[in-house]
Amino acid sequence: MLESTQIAIEILSNHLKLKQQELMNISNEGDIWLHPVLAISLGQWISPHFMIQSCMWLTSFLLNYDETKKQIDDVKCEISTLKNIYAKKQPRTNFPEKNVVYIITTADLLSQRIYIIGKAQDLKARLSTYNKTCEHQVIYYKSCGTVENMKMV
Image (cartoon, rainbow, N blue to C red; front, side, top):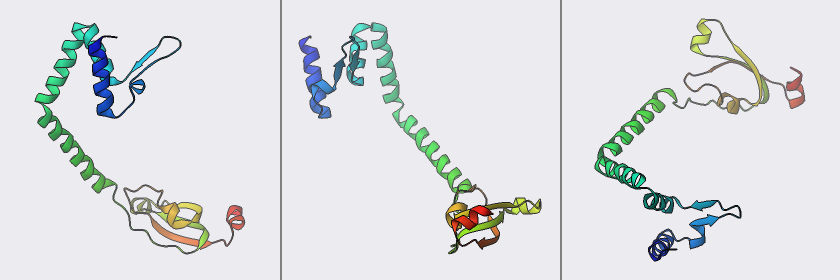
């Protein structure tokens, strides 16, 4: 191993607070695994084309860092806005009865006279799994008493 390679491994090991053996591994079959920093360094040493390409990527990233960061921040803002519009939390009503059969609908489904019928051990928890883009209205629910009775329905 070249002295410069050994020095680079020691520097990276100290910087990452890892043992040198954790930065590279050679299997019994001869396969070599290197930490990504060492792999890039090896690639740059082996291929002048890779060296130039990786330097160009890094330079492009550094020169466009502010623009790239702004684009990422804009995307995060868009995602947050969409989340607030479409994935808003619906108010949850507490249903103290357990093991219930229920009928629910949404405003859109109600206009079409469509209802959802189901059963649940905990109605509040069950309602939280429905589509969050619209509010589900409980039309009717009735406790069956036990899980066995509910399963017979």
